[in-house]
Image 1 (tube, rainbow, N blue to C red):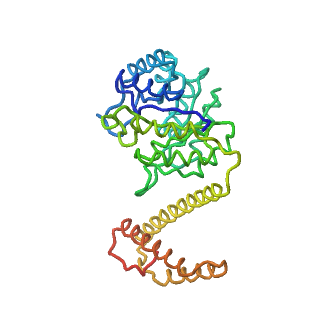
Image 2: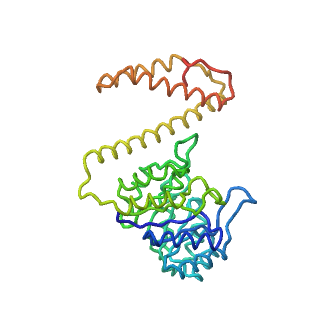
Image 3: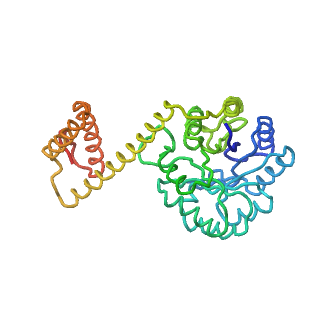
Amino acid sequence: MSSLLICGPCSAESQEQVLQTARFLVAHDVPVLRAGVWKPRTMPGQFEGYGEQALQWLAQARETTGIKIATEVALPEHVELCQRYDVDMVWLGARTTASPFAVQQLADAMRGYDKPVMVKNPINPDIHLWTGAIERLHNAGIQVKAAIHRGFSVNGETYYRYPPLWQIAKKLKTIYPQILMIGDPSHMAGRSQLVPTIVQQFVNRHYDGVMIECHPDPTSARTDAQQQLNFAQMETLLTCLLSREEPKDKDELSLLRERIDDIDDRLLTLLHERLETVEQLGAYKTLHKLSFSQPERFRHMLKQRLVWCKAHGMDEEFVSQLFQLIQKESIQRQQKTNNDQPLSTAEEV
């Protein structure tokens, strides 16, 4: 795989941990060591990084091994310290990208900054926040080297910690074809055992690189322990990545699978939008004291859908079962929204 590899622990936790990781990565031809120096945490009192001391560890690891170093910046003073320690690459995190004010402050602080800058997708699935952050940096004269696709936060339980929503990253790449697209499988997966599967998806989609979290002993990690690979896991993954020959032409099977993945992403996005609309409709009915039970509405709606299916050669029984499942989930969402009495599954919004 010919791409940019950026690897290292979620957080820089000690000088020995950083140096040990740097030596491991250099031995496996990884050019860039990443580590969090300032960690934005949801709750106060949690580990928030070692700040400037951690930058010193990174700089010492670079001096000892020759590896390049990268970290996240979220405040103008972070930029100043990274310049002081000559950090090779910086990135804006998902929470920062979601805040235009924060991005503008960083853009102002970075004027004249000549190091590569990367921008992670915002935590919420809004491409305009992502493109807006990139534009603010561009307007300050900063050339963004890469966009980092780390997945998005969505409502409800999901298989991945942050589902990829591939179509958003694909759209960004069409807007900025000159910017590298880097995949972050660690945050996307949320579990170390899922990381290789997502890396393969990045490879299949011809991403320009990956940013992977690894740790000498993930069980002792102070942040995101579950998603970090140990060195044995990392070595196996790197061996596959670095030895892989890029196919000259993508085979038809891969193209078809990618197309199915993209379609599935759109299906899930639309289903999520439908369920959100159901909740809004339920709230409207409660406010206006409208009847909650409308079985005739469901039967009429299903009849219309089946007419369409017949005209397009789709199996009517399959579609009927599918909409009954959607109907059941819609009722459950409406009950939660309205705190009403239980409904039968024959009723519809």
